[in-house]
Image (tube, rainbow, N blue to C red):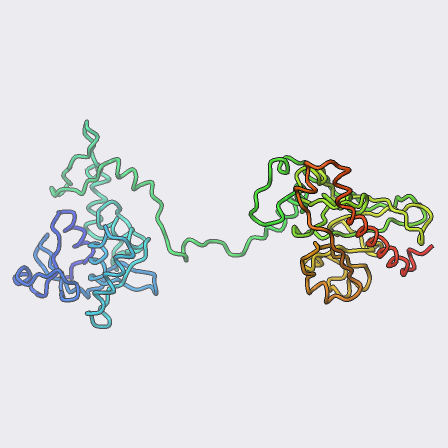
Amino acid sequence: MSSPDPLILLRTSLAASRQPQLTTADIPSDAVANATNSFSEATHLYFSHPTPQCLPLTTPTRFTSTTPDTAQVDLRSVYFAWTQKDVTITDSIAVASEIDRALPEGQKIRTLVFGERIDLITWLEGASDSSEYIKAPEGAPGTADAAAKAADIAGGAGVPAVGATGIAVTQQTAGGRPARVIDARLQAIYNGERKMGDHNSVLRGIKPTDFSHVRKHAETFLGRRKVAGASSRPGQPVSKSLANRPVPTPQKPLTNTTVNPKRADPIILLSPSASSLLRMSNIKSFLDQGLYVPADHPTLSSPLVSNILHITRTLPSLSDRPMRFIIVDGPEQFKPEYWSRVVAVFTTGQTWQFRGYKWREPQELFGHVLGVFVGEKGLPIPTEVKGWGSSVKSFLVERWDERSHGAGVESRERENRRWRDREVVEELWRTLEGHMRGRAEWKR
């Protein structure tokens, strides 16, 4: 006579509301007298239905767990999972650890992951007739019980009948035994559930997906520039007046059109860093008018930000005619020949600014162009800037005071109070003129 299937036996007992009992006896006649509630003391599980019998708790079942390795789960672990069906996984693991201390090696409880535990409990309750973790018996596509149940369902006997109240009623199978019937509404919920799996079954795909084309497509519409006045600190909210500002216009090619047709327009590169005092929103007022205003000021900085600005300035030692300078904050649209026209690079001391440059090393870069650092008086100059050599010049402006220089102050009064800005700007232009005078392409 073949040994009974532990899983089928357990499921049948639960369906008949005949809960199995832990015991230290190995024969049914002594099972009740030696019953216990301790998983560490019990050696067998006593079933009173359909016929009294005792199965060792070490009996392997057809339920397989994939963690940490694929192996058959013993009866002790299966029954423990059932008794812990209303307990959280964390508490269940704690209880299992306490039991394992009294169990010998090789008989310890195998804890199931969330997906395995739900799948097992659903199958034992009769809410599901299949489980991806339960292997079919060897030599047969299914058990006799499963075959009988399939025949019952095919004949309509196993389908829950719903009365006028909407509650499922009990039906008899073809063999005369009561069928496991679940409320039709609950069964509809079970049918709509998606089976969960471990990370090996959930992860799909044979190669990573490359989304670089999405970034390139997005840059066409968004660009890498932000609206002027964007917060200089990550996470800082942007005021309504700043949020309503227009999106930067697309950058146009750096043409050679200039006041002096014989010479190409020199280019000045700004730092794209949010910590830079000078950005596209306030660089024109600083270099053209000699007045510094915060780049994120809601009313005094430029309301419309472009990716390219022009400033006209006369440099007497280079030309009798005004020279037009092109100001941009990134070399994304550069052609190779544009780099020979770059005369100055504004920096905050952050080397990531130079990643897209022709010369990525600061020492090499500032061997070709003038480096400009603009900071606030009273604050230290970054050590990186000091270490890049004499080709990087530092200029300091007075700290902005909203009460003295802000929007409530008349324009003329503001210029009078910020008169030191003009001194700084004039010194900056003289330094740039001297640098350009040392390069052959900008001489008379």
